[in-house]
Amino acid sequence: MRQKVEITIDGKIVELPVLEAAAGRNVVDVRGLIAEGIYTFDPGFLSTASCESRITYIDGEAGVLTYRGYPIEQLAEESSFLEVCYLLLEGELPSETQLSSFVQDISARMPIDDQFKHIFDGFTEKAHPMSMLCAAIAGLASLYHDDLDIKNAAHRRESAMQLIAKTPTLAAMTYRKSIGAKFIEPDPELGYAENFLNMCFGEPGKPSSVSSTLSDAMDRIFILHADHEQNASTSTVRLAGSTEADPYAAVAAGIAALWGPSHGGANEAVLDVLNEIGDESRVQEYVDKAKDKNDPFKLMGFGHRVYKNFDPRAKVMQASCHAVLHEQGADNDPLLKMAMQLEKIAREEEYFIDRKLYPNIDFYSGITFKAMGIPTNMFTALFVLGRMPGWIAHWDEMLSAPFKIGRPRQLYLGPTKRDYVAIDRR
Image (cartoon, rainbow, N blue to C red; front, side, top):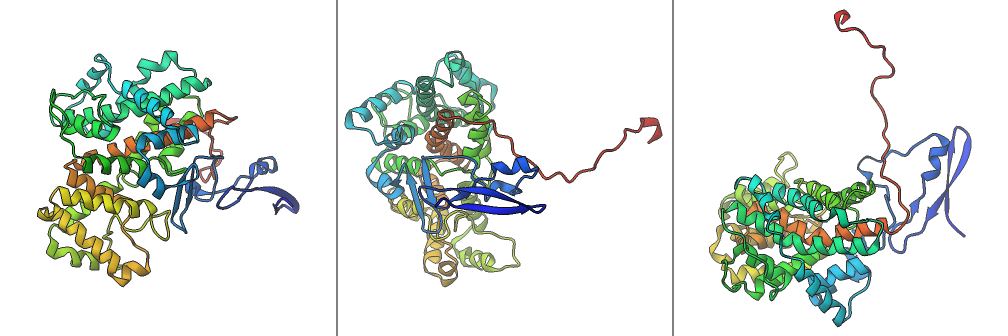
């Protein structure tokens, strides 16, 4: 028998159907309440399912994350980022032929039009990479808007390919702009992650010198960040997309949401904390500050709002992080030595174990980026690269079925009707 919930409104019993989830919690369908003249109140939408989706599932209590049903641990160990992109977009893993064709198609779309590159002329070298990347992604609409019908599945697929292909090139260009260096063209012989790192740190006209340890770690970071259900930036992409906005504009809105320090800036905050600690001898002092309820200091990179047991992405990322630290000689870097000491404390001290304050994905990605030589202000731009297929998959999923323009309600608490008073009588 189908579940239902009954509520009483002014003595009238109203039945609300319960929608069954394939996994996780069922939801109460409250859409009928509008006919009763009442809305629900849920600040931050913490108890509200805003859409149906078949892309990503999270069980925060059990520490589970799956893309299209595949555990993140298996994908990170066995797959590649572009294979995961295909999975998110198409719903199934590709055959060898399909993946080869997909990789070639992405590679062919990575170069940026010479005229479009001048968009970076409007920025100074001090401009934040996220401001440049947000503008550049939105600017892609000027190249592709006229040939895009968002109701056409083939057109949506082409825009997805363009965004996945061009984002690493544009992100690398923001970095090169920030250091006053010439742009480096993508190399069709290189893999996705290696191409990005070479476009950032390589030398024009010379072959890539990016090690497999670094490119493999970056590819894994992209996989681990590829989607995370209805988070703030994904919800923003869906909300902007619900207006039938161009996908480049919708994704630019998602980038703007990701830029916030409470969302995409968490791994940057990890480095800020390490810089504040300043020296290995002060680590225990700051651990004690974090334990003190009366001290406002927060130890960033430990625990997670969604995962109440452990972050499955962090468990996967730990090995890659340590491999990068070893290759890059982290033993000689005071900041990274502090990070390793913090990790050891968090995994051994009762305080952290009892409260499940484990190192999360932001902790490991932050110190991995630091070890790679990536500047802190580029961290969130790298998050954009990883999250791009998830944003596009959700945007496409929404447009592939009947949808309504997003229109949240409010609980109005302002003044009631007042009569206007002429300025000379106030």
